[in-house]
Length: 450
Image: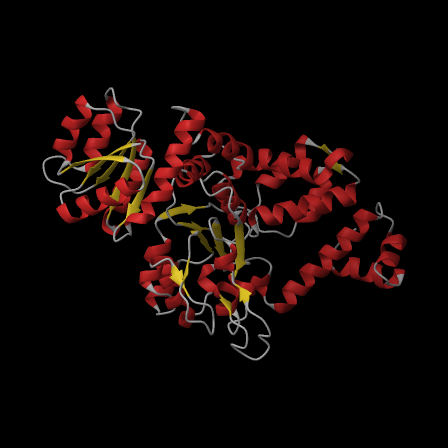
């Protein structure tokens, strides 16, 4: 391909041009954006690799002018320092194909350029994110303003190899988003390896992530690949990255920053050709403030940030989301959702977010035999906090009243569920719980239930 390299740093410009020429490309260089603009006016190029900060005409303005002119089909790759990442994100929105952050190795550009070459061969001048556009709308349910922002950021992240940080409460769907990002990236032919950082014991996390050599510790009877090796050429998803111990964060930083690591007990450097998608349920800046998370690691992970809103902030999406979840749960058996039941779903806070909605609907389908009525949903979610009720921490109501209040709430809900399952027959409900009918009636009276 014909590539134009634009950089006001001569050494970087010349060495990058030499390395790209060595890959079989025809390379032309320009010392600033204005010179590049003049070259693009009279010559055709497939790819422009340009710095952002340059004299006379910067990389972002060069991109704008070219996308508005006759060379709009040329693909742009931007080189940026970390302080200019918001500018690079803006460039992605304007149509840039990708960006790399300084310092980087010249060979880091090779797979990006190879991907662009394959896209041009296979799809001509079709936008690179056509597939992502379709799948994002199919997989991510919601038309609220907050979810539209999420979709826009997913499409941007699918077009680039930049690291992604997914932020949001437990149950908002971060795991789903990681899969969508991977499937629509140029790494989709490689593996997606998921790592639940919360589930890894502190003593084993290093071995799990990077592997170990035979005999490196007691029980290491043979060499074993870690998650980074298993994700070679693909994506590694670090779920709940906020749970990685502080003493392990330096090695993770090196694997991300230098793209190299060693197995436990090993000395041979292993290349880490992976894309990082991480998620956090906490505000990492708060952990940085108390010294529990490395600031330099945070900046490496937080290149593209996607915040998933809690369900209580997008209540208008609940009807469509409910229909999608019910179709998935009911399958060929079908279901009948009473329209009057939907407002009941919309008025509650859902502290467990989409995950909690899913399990509530699952129980309702089982108890109602496919018939979901307002009364049934009232019984299922009647104890959850509503819009007017205060929240307390992550769990909120009913634990706000202490242990006894929580136990009373759980007992009341158990009685209601048993009654609902047995069609209001108290004797059958008592038997289903292994209680004497008299004990069951006493508990109903205790909670004021009829």
